[in-house]
Length: 482
Image (cartoon, rainbow, N blue to C red; front, side, top):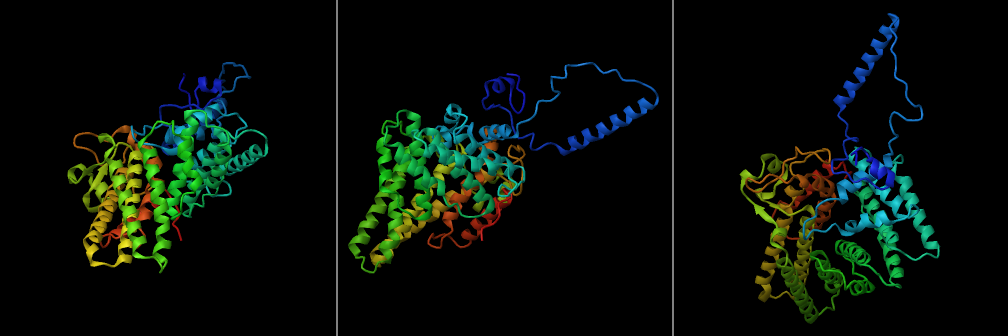
């Protein structure tokens, strides 16, 4: 490997994506001082050449083969894909962390054919992210990603109209198109409709007519299920009953904390979606409310039991010592001078998802107790409110770990960002880029779930969370929602 950029000669010869260990973002963030200096040097050389010609001095240039170009043309699309894999995929996630379906993208990408819909779908996501980090609007009509998005949709439609079997790359293509919609919606500040995730469900149902043969295929199935469960929890929807069979299809997959959490969250989503109808129905009797109350308690106990199975290194460590939290971090946003440190941004996101599920269960419990309207349950009601406050505080405590002291736009691999740390241990070098890459979407997904008035919190906390959401939008140049 000659370590050439944006692709080394070895990968160029093999025609594969070059995964380089060093930052791939330097081309997009060129030092403007260096650019200006080079321009001045070129003008000085040109003036010197003119003066030498006037004095009759002739420069003898060495001859070279005209068939060899001085500089190889740069494939910007290839560079964007390389940036995407380096900054979003080839990252340490921790023993218990999980990137969802992105965990399995690279092997499927490498094995896909050039005409696979996964190729343009992934390129569309890569270009969108690179444009966003380059201060360009991914929703602009001039976006370089849009044609690839259209190509991905067209190639997927063509594949579905053919007699070919649905394969992993087809399912992964729909998930990448879903991700494209998610990134552009985030940048625009609009809700993510999730149209492609519905299409992936139809593809999976078609694919299930023949067995998912290998372990990677089964993991993609469970990762897709995780997206559906997350959407159901956020939008207060039930999980389709046929999706419950997906776990049976993937029984042979080695269990992980993320997959085990999804199993419980399927039941949480269905209970949370049903509570509105139960409580709104005046005919609901106390027996139904008591049964729902008991179910919510049982699910909450299962979630607590799940959290205790996590390896010790994957559980959050809370810091309240001001000396371990840089002042710039506290000034940017550190609720009650308390923050948490995690094994990775992925374990932090999973833990925040666990907290949000438990908050939803406490809301169900409180709704049932309001229906029963019995002073006997006053202590239980107070306990549920205290749990919500504790869980909301835990989510708020993760904000410094994700954002550090970022309050405005910086490059993705900026090592000058300050983060909380443990004692004499510095911030791990591998934390900077994943935190910048994922903090925007990860935090937005969780913080908005704390905003509904049905989530009891101490006075002023909801306004503080709104301020942090605005901070996220400033950091990522995301337009505000209406």
